Length: 581
Image (tube, rainbow, N blue to C red):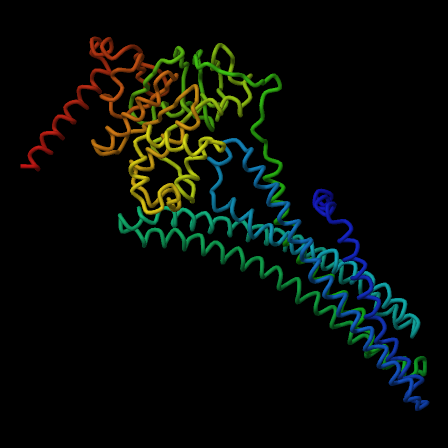
């Protein structure tokens, strides 16, 4: 763990060395004051050498000015090193998150991931800067103070330093408990952030159902757990600090009593005794700093452990035999089964979609239609069976190559916070403005864009909140037009839309699917009756397969669904006509 932490210092080793050198000289200069004090008390003042008293004063002033500059260097450049290390860790974490499989995001909340990216890495950054600095200053000061105090009185120095083992034994016993407490506290912050992120994202749903009190209760539950975890951490920290502080206070008592006895026995002069009393802080100060460093170390390393836990997650990898392919678009499922977290989702699915043809997947919710769509771009690995494109198993196709040639339009459209143009170019970053305009025309969204004051530079808001559902859907279609994929997946792309908007989107989809191998997940069966093949998917298996006319003749599951939906649509039309009268 520590070795991996040190790796992040390598790009800044020159600046780090200068920072440590400056810290060393800060420690050395700190030793000068008690030495000068002893000289004055034992020599200059008793001998009334006031000229040298002034000279020593000027000398100390000059040294302290230099120490001021050194402290500025350590504070500024030390923090700069910490910030750059934090940035590099955040970059590594972001790149790792980009390569993790979809299953990781199924199991981890966004708020918790954000905690790793922010507060955890801030603690690590503070440790990266202050840790080595405090360690070197404290170590140098303890060694130098031992040598200096020994030069005053060896016996008294040994008595004081004999307490150090007791201090570090107690610190060791308490630090592990404090580390675990701080780790739990960090987890509680992640829970709060997850709850907060969920509540803010769903604020419109919360308001629509008047469930502000419910969200407040959910947040308060996490808040209470946070208080408990933090209280436990601070209890451990308080026990650690109070105990170690008590021992350091004992140093002063021992110094005072033992020094007094030595003075009574004439084993030490009054000047040396006074200098020893003054100089004992040279020892106590660094010891206190080391104790504080232990707390900082536990806090920072608990954050680094959580950071490493993500870095050590298994990435989404290409198979060793995977290659780049220029695909045409023939899709074949051969006895494909898929289970997720020990729950079977698909069971022995087989079908073939020839180049340029359309397969529609219909059936009740939760039957496995969307899962089939997720398996084609290799978002998840199949449990058994095989998926082929152009007779090539998809695991032998590099994921980037495969996904580059697949376009997906989903019911729940995700738009990034930015402009309409930014989101359209996500389909192909090197697209020209002429291509963008043509894609928006093909998707029936161009006129709406041009009606906006800022046109293509209009902001869409977080997740496209400034646009209607139909507008977002058409933007996503335009994005796929720009991508120009060989294979198209439409996952309920026209669900939950009004009739007028559905007609606009359906006409855009008709243009988009032309000449492309297409998988359509449809809720409204009237929109897919002209598909080349239709599969009824129920409970993870294909119950019926064929063209619309054939399935209607069988008068089984598909025909039942279609007739029920036709009656519902007919009833809705009658109600609409009645309301218009």
